[in-house]
Length: 431
Ligand code: SAM
Image (cartoon, rainbow, N blue to C red; front, top):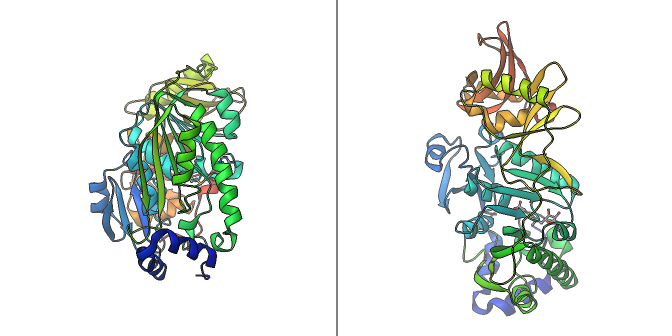
């Protein structure tokens, strides 16, 4: 690790006093790693029984410490059974457990740690809008939402200002996991060290102030605002919240948590939970669903045959034949880039319905025809190989054990691989 900035150390020494040596010593230890079990797909107890590598102590409701070097290169990871998350970042989700979650916005969501955590708590109820202003990062967020099988969300890319103008006093929970000076990332991201300066702390604090003002505008009466950073600077943490409360007297501070690497086995995080006690609540226009009788008929015929219990809901069909299951209560999202809406069902070309990968990830457990592969054989599927199988001809869901990985199409003793090309793994990548 590169030497820590002198000015940073001086500031930490002033802040921590007698605790500074313990804080400093924490940089001599390897970074703490964690995973959070996706309870939309498996219970933490069941995951612990099947875990492909040793799990350490638990973190919160569904997290575990791990030592594994390549935890992302495992078929269970592809099946969305877990999300790799820095242990102290799981505190944000722990603070949101009791919050109302009918209409949730994650304002700074990529790559999806907090989004996927809150989605697991929502268990398919309510609507979760996951926003990321940076479009290429929003694509990664969208992939993670798909992998985790989240069915009640939309992934969008817009600035906080655009969203604040569109959704005044609408959400009952807004998460603002703001970009920050990343003092808690020094071990994980080497770039965070040379980028650190007092001037950058001040710039981050200014940007956070703007993000928080937009976030506040979108919280409805009685709703919550959950702010977090992975830095220790007061300007971005405690003082930011003090300053926010002075500008927004309608909000009450419900709690703050600051984790340091010498007080918690993790790299550090700050979270503040606020409630809006004055103001109003406004509805938003509902999502304008476009229906196509023929396309829906084709999908419903497919779903009756494919699923034991076809997923229910409103089907939205685009002019090009792509179809989506829209979560109940989804608001209109005009004027923002929409990367993912509910669950992509598939595509109708006027003659045939072709199911989408997202459908297998969200509802594949209900499929009638599942090919349940042991872990080694599942790796062949993840590499894009064709499988031998005596499955009945037609679309099927390919699983690692009983956990869906994607689609296949059985044709006379073989299963053609329909895993999207961009998700396939090179031979030597998988553990
Ligand atoms: N919540 C994410 C998670 O748990 O995986 C991490 C979010 S990261 C700390 C902050 C995000 O804010 C980044 O993805 C960054 O692109 C985005 N961001 C940067 N500038 C922003 C701005 N001005 N307004 C909103 N978001 C911004």
